[in-house]
Length: 136
Image 1 (spheres, rainbow, N blue to C red):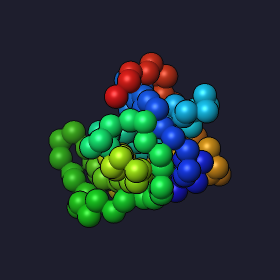
Image 2: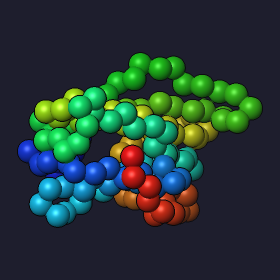
Image 3: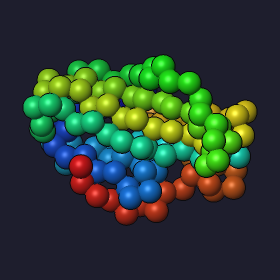
Image 4: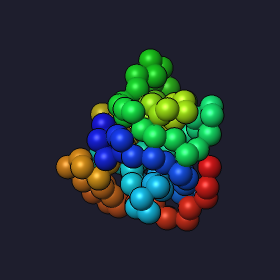
C-alpha cells in the first residue's frame, strides 16, 4: 500500500518502457516511484495503467492493493502467470495499475513503494528496470 501518495496532487504519470517502474510527478515538484518487484526466480512488470476518467491533476484520497480475482495462467509462454492490481482513488476518478508476475508457481510479485521494506531487483537482478520513461 502506498501512503506516500495520499493527500498529494498528481500532475503527471510515467511508466518505463519495460513496465518495471511507474512514476507519479506531484504538484510540489517531487516524484513518487513504485517498482514492480518479483520474488526470487520470478519476474514482475506493470502490464497496464488506467488513468482517472476526469484526467489530471488529481488529488489522492486513498491507495490500496486491488484483488483482480483472476486465476493463474499456465501456457507455452508462462510456466505460471499471476495477476495483481493496485487502486489509487483520486478526486477525479481512479488510477488502476494492473501488474503481472511470471514464475514457476512458487513465487509472486508486488509493487514496491518508497515506504515499503521490499527488496528491489531480485536475487539475480531480474527485476531491474531499464528506466526509459514514457508519459501516460
